[in-house]
Image (cartoon, rainbow, N blue to C red; front, side, top):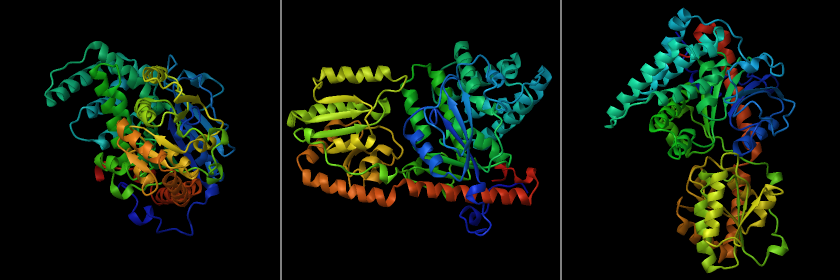
Length: 538
């Protein structure tokens, strides 16, 4: 019988306690998209601390980046055996970098893709994949199986020649236009895709499926740092029985993708295509993952709603190193001015406009208050930063609300404030909240992601996009310094007890060992064909 999932006892570590995979023999492929080691941010911080915190584990990094000119911003530790960059843009052909001697043995070799081969071996799974986008109900098995067959095809045949062929275009045009019309009809909307729409959609798909061309080394576990594109190697490898698949979700990838599309200037057709692609890949990642490790319990309901089996969801909280975030008295020079600190990247998801409006309300009651915001706008967010600056000027807050750029250290930034504020409209389990708690700072945070879990009993939770409520919470703390200090002390104790780096890394090491042991056992007990995952048998 084809293998489905290991028995519950094996997944829970009830067997092989004395024969499990030792840390020194573990190999893990960590897959990221737009984060580590090329960009900084919360997920990148977590990746770096995970890799450095498990020096006995051999890591291979697969990182999807915006362009081939990107350079790592982190110095990689010695236990990173290989870094495989996957540029999604900036190349004429997806496979052209394989000729660069600086990235040997990464890309699958080009071989011929004559029309008869495309017709017989590529079009069937390609057609199934496109049709799955438009299905009214989740179809993760169809999506995953199509991806696995496409990956097998690209093992032997040229990616560029295939996807640029007339046969691929005609198939895509037919399926995507008819599928979209049926989709719209089911929604009670009359709409059609233009030729330009279809061309743009295929161009996106051509880049998204690049990851199928990467020749991954043999590892015990594929660890995706998010669902979406980063989870595709896990979906494919798990079906082939090559590696166990672990999926971490810091935030809710699908939710954030859908939120991002609401701000998109793309045509409605292309917004729908992107939304459906994200939805289908997410559903497939939940089906094939041996374990789903959300960063907070908040994510469970999204995961369950999108088909994740409850028994495979196990929260692993992120956390900083307590040694790097300790309480300190505010600098004496700042004692005269009550100060509220914010730390993060300048991004629409952080909703700084609500924070700025709240600052204007607070200033009406406490004129000498200061809001100090540490962080900068990443590339692409310059226009949002300009909007924030314009709003600050419009409200006359130039001397009240300060954009301070990068801080000398995050610890110093948190300790500069009487308390810390977070105004986001979407989060996972944010480092900024737990880091501030480690510093003994009370946090006022919006009720998104795992913020309520972190702050329960030791902070203040407010409604997102509500400047009045955010301002009222800030005023109450500013006017009651004893309460603020007491909550800060409780916050530090809670963070030390539940949210430390050491606890996080220990949980991941145990998970790696358990999944690797299970997979090696299954591989040793059956031929490769019997180890492969079969969604049809579920």
